[in-house]
Length: 395
Image (cartoon, rainbow, N blue to C red; front, side, top):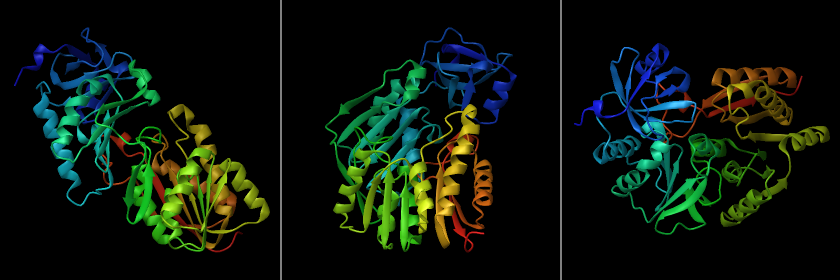
C-alpha cells in the first residue's frame, strides 16, 4: 500500500471531521481549513485540524461539496480497489437483480463517489458527475465489462451539476455503438429507452418497483399524471378499464403511444398539458378516477426551494385527492431529497384536510433496491412513494 502521506493533504475543521467520522461521504467547502494546493479531481489525504489522518477522498475545487470519501484509511485508490468496489456492488444486487434494465452502480452508496451506471440490455450508460469520477470512468467501465455482457458504453454526462465541477455537459460514445432505442422488459411490460436523449440515463429505473406495485393495485379508471413515457400507466393498463396519460411533453407522449402499441394496449388515451391546470379542470367538470398516480419532477432542488415546493406538492395532491372516486387510490411520489419523508407526509396530511378527504396510508415505499440507501448518507434516500386510499366520499 502506498502511504497516503504522498498525497496532497486537505485539513478540515471539527464539524467536518465529525461528519467524516459519522461515515457521511461528503465534506462541505465551509469545513475546509486548508486545501493543500490540490487540483480539481485530485485524490487527497484528509486530515483533521490537528493533522490526524482520516482517509482519502476526491477533491473538488469549485463545488460546495469539497470532499467525497473514497476510503477511511490511507491507501491510494488503484484499479484493484475500483474493481473490488464494482464486484461488491454487483454481488450485493445478487443473481435475482433485473436483467433487462438495472442500475449497477449508485455513486457513494456503492463506494464509487460521483458516478452512476445503468445497464440496458447489453448497453452500459455511465453518468459522471464530478472531476474525480471523470478520471476513473474508463477504469469503472472496464471493471463492469469484466462481469457483464457489455457491447457499448455511453457517457451520458449532461446533468447541470457538472457545471459546478467545471466540467462540460456532453453526451459521448466511449466504446462500441449505443442504439438510440433499446427495448427493455419490466415484468411483462415492454418499454423503449432512449439513452441518448431520454431522462436521466434513458429511463426512471428508481420507480421500477413502484410501477409494478401500482399496476397490481389498478382498476377501473386511472389517471397517470407527469407520465413521461407512461411507465405507470402501462402497468396499470393490464387491469384498468381506461388509463388517461397526461404529460407536458409532446415527445414523451409520442414515445408513450409507441410503448402502448408495442404492448398491444388500446385502453390508454394521451393528453398533452400542464398537470396542475388539467387536474383543476377535471375537478371542475366533476370527473372521478379509481386510481390517480402523481410522479412530478423534483420541486425542491435545494433547501431554499422548500417553501415553494411544499406549496406545489400540496396543491397537486389536493387536486389528485379531489378526483378520487369513493375508496379510490392515490399513488403519489416525490423525488426531492430536500423534502424528507416526514415532511412529505405532513404535506399529504395538509392536502387531505384541505381536500376534505379522509385518507388511509396503505404503503410507504421508496426507490428500487438497485438504488441502495447508505445508512450514514441520508441523501441517498431521496424517493418517496405513498399509496393512499380514500376512506369514502368527500366531506
